[in-house]
Image (cartoon, rainbow, N blue to C red; front, top):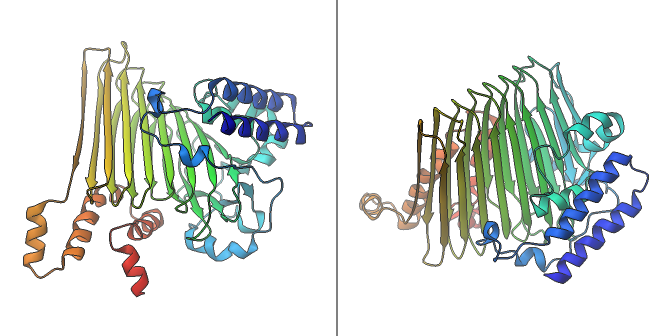
Length: 442
């Protein structure tokens, strides 16, 4: 662990020396991030927040950020397969790929910029945004992301802007080198605005080697703003992914998060949302599907700091072979947050004797006029349902696939019909039991 920490400290130090001409405020953010990362170090199983996370794939790797962008025109077919209609920024191995990106179709009032451009053109705006939701002092990988701050995107919606077309940020890794990508995404939704943002993380090919993505997204929703946020994580089997989504919600704002984790040998997805104004609504949905020796870790935190806010949370896991899934969800209701209405559910389906699921839902209630509930379940396929399907002549493997698909559909069906749901359904089909056999037959 000590050598791994030394490696990343050296990586960040060399990065700082290479970009010594950055603005003073940016150099300060990077330096503070590096200092916090050095102080906190890499977490171990002795750290309560990382007790169930197996970090060996990260510690054993020697990941480094690419020094320069590579030509990415040969990945056009991959972008066509994973891309959505509408504006998008595409990043390859952590670097913007202008030849694959397109900003056509942006509605009036919506601004989407690569972070590199925003650092040069909107320095004062970024200085006021970076690190306001995701605190480097509280999270070691947020600190590492800050220390390597350079690439990512800035999405801004003027008050009253209504965007019906999803905006996509597509992050691809080739997998031919141990690349470290550290995207920082900043979203500001003005009063009474509405938009959909899709973050997609994928590998260029199924046989791609080990890579490390350390992503941080900071979202500010002003009063009465609405944001649907989708995260589709389908990187290669050898990939490591750590991602944090941090949200501040204003009065009467609405936030919906959909996190789909399908790829990587290690994937940790965190969602933190805080209510800063009364009448806010938050929906956190997640689906994680693992097989082989994958470790899929999910951590959520909902902070009800003001009265009359509503939150709903549903995370489901489907685990096969030796895969392990973890869910840790915290709902905190502060003393003044009366009339809070919050519900949390985590359900896991184990498809093999060796699969594991850890569920830890938590309520911390310091107010008395609230409606709060949580629950967790871990189980196997319903024997009676399986018997019923087999008695109708359906082979066992197909019956198991049908029941597993039905279990996952609850989260998928919560996605509005359209191109985003179609992408989710396509990625899910490749992960269901029997998918590999169907691919071979094809």
